[in-house]
Structure formats: structure tokens, C-alpha cells
Length: 387
Image (tube, rainbow, N blue to C red; front, side, top):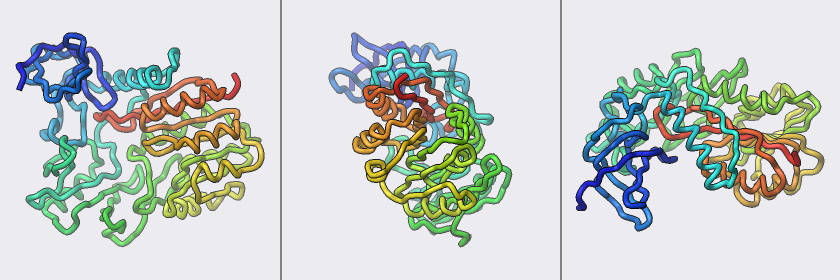
């Protein structure tokens, strides 16, 4: 093992690592924060860059605070509990700007300050626990392989913590998913996520967002931070500024979260989703709208065959972003404006590069902190065609 090197951390990367330079080489260091002066042992040398492990914090960053959870640093659930929350918001804004510049080639992007979560603690409404080797419940550890049995968790809703305490000795299921129903309810249910059934036998969870109730079956996606989900909807709708005359597409529409609010402000909405259970949920959630069409298929297949003018598009793809065919199909429709909702700034930047090349202009990017104390970032990107 090499001797420790002294390193000044100058930034933070998507993935949560601090970054510094030694003899011109970038060194990525988990749990290091901008402003830290640290001793680092190189754990993996990749030639042009390397990974290191902190052996001593010589001078701590002004952003450093005491982590609240005893499991922090070993548990894989959080990455930045040791960073002041205001600093986490700055990091996320900086990361989005950096990804847009480096991957997207967008030099002058307007990236707004990250919108803070109303409560950076106790925000998760659903979570998956695994069974450790000793039979106790826990999370996947930082090594992404072992299960760490836990005794506390500060980012899940109190009813989930109560459920965890009730099931702490359970070995009945190799993976147990707990989730809470609505934002104003303490009703909690447990889901065996490996075989997609509710332990209570109810089959679905219900969430209320801006007075609209959504049914979500086991296996269907829904945002984990309900307070910030309302913010997400508000930010999307304010950017679109629909007049009621538009024909709108909702791509990767899931259970119809965006569709419901688009339908309230537009002439017609087409929702496209390939996952069967989510489509079934959407048909229930959107049943009151006669001008909404729900199509179960891939985005690329529907768009290449879709006739007629499209005024606006909202898309919320999975972490991998859009497939090349889907991006080409979207470009072929030439909607006047696009709202791209992303949970991965690197794939967002890649896809924005293609859209800009095709004639779109990025108006702005708005990070929203859906996942405090983690490096994960939700971003809204607003584009217009030909401006």
C-alpha cells in the first residue's frame, strides 16, 4: 500500500466523492468535502485518475457537521450526512452545471439554486430492507454487496421506523419494502418486494398530491418525497404555462402523476408507458378525464407512428435516460416546448446535447432536492424549439 498523500479537496462529483489533485492527477475520495485538507491512501490507481481513502482529516471543511446516524459511513443509504444541508444544496447545483458543461457541451446553462426539501429528515415514504446474515433487517452497505443490519434510520417517515421496529427480528422475507400511504396519513403497509405483494393483502398504496389521489400498485414507481413531489409538479406546470388549447404528450408516464395535472390545463393529453401494472394504475388514476389517452407501449414505437401536431412534451425517463430511437422519435415531432424531468444529471446532459443539436434551446435547469443526504439529484430542464 502506498504512503498517504496530502490532498486539498476542491470539489465534489456526481456520485458523492470529493475530488482533489496530486501531481496533476485527479483523486476521488469518498466522504471528502470541498475545503477539506486530508491525508489520503490510494486504494485504486486508474492511471489518469485514482481513488483514495481518507486516513486523517487535517483541516475540516467549513461544511463539515456531525452525522446524525450511527451507521453513516458504512450504510449505503446516505452519502452526505456529514455535510451541512445548505452545502448539499450548493453541491447539487454545481454538479448539474458541471454535467451540462462537460457532457452536454452547454457552456452558459442557467442552473438555478437547488430547491430545498421542506424537511431534510424523515422524508422517505417507502424503503426496501434486506435481511442480514444474522437475520436482522438492514440496508445494502457502502460496498454494494453486504447487508448492514441497522438500528436507526433518520431519512424515513416515522411510521416506517415504527414498522421497522416491529419487524426487526423478521426473517420471513429476504427483502421487505415498507411504505406509507398519503402525505397526511400515518397508515403504513409492508410490501414483499421480491414477489410484489402486500403483506396486508391490500395490493395498492394511495398517495394524495395537490388534492388528486393516486393508486400505486406494488412494483409501480412513485416519488419517495411527497412534499417535494408537489414542488416538482408546480415547477413543471409553471414552466409550461398551458392555455388549455394544447395537445400534450406525457412520456414514461407511469401511474399518471404528471398526466393528471397536464389534463387539467390542456385540450388533450397522450400518456405513454410500457410497464403494465403502472398503466393499470394510470387508468384508475385518470378515469375522470375524458380527454386523456393512455397507451401501453414504448415511447419510440408510439412517437414514430403518432399523427398530428404536438404542442408540448413532459418526459420523466428512467435513470438511463432516453434510448437513441426514442430521442430521434421525439425530435421528429418538433414540439414547441419540452420539460425533461431527470433523476440523473449525466444522462440528462447527454440527451440535452442531442436535443440542442436538433434545434432546441435550453431555457433553464432547476435542481430539486428529492433525496437529502444523498448525491441523487432531480432536475427539471425546460427547452423550446427554434428560439
